[in-house]
Length: 129
Image 1 (cartoon, rainbow, N blue to C red):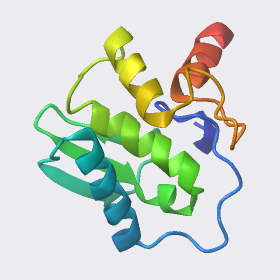
Image 2: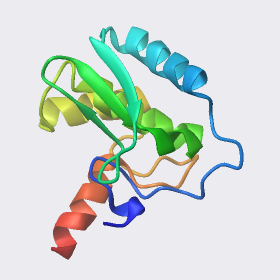
Image 3: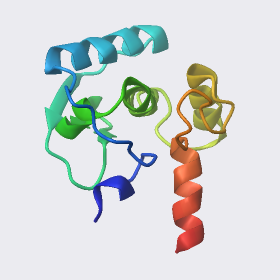
């Protein structure tokens, strides 16, 4: 599977020349966890080839290490998406509303990035099947 066809993601942009450090990334996650009022049981960074991140029912949130090389706006969407699963385990209307509210994208392309949101990308993939 191509890297830009990962589940739970929008198409990645050109990787950064200087990736974020693991500590900086974990700080980003912590800031968002506080904003969303969630507490991950565990935070992990590991190699992942089919998706950018995952969230277990026990509260473990795992992110792909190559996410560190993506722009902040891309990382933000992945982080918020996974942390919201600590509140809402599915992708139903409540989840989509919370995601849109916290990312201020209104369910459409984020104007500052031009990237597709998680849900726009999923809809595109479903139409292509």
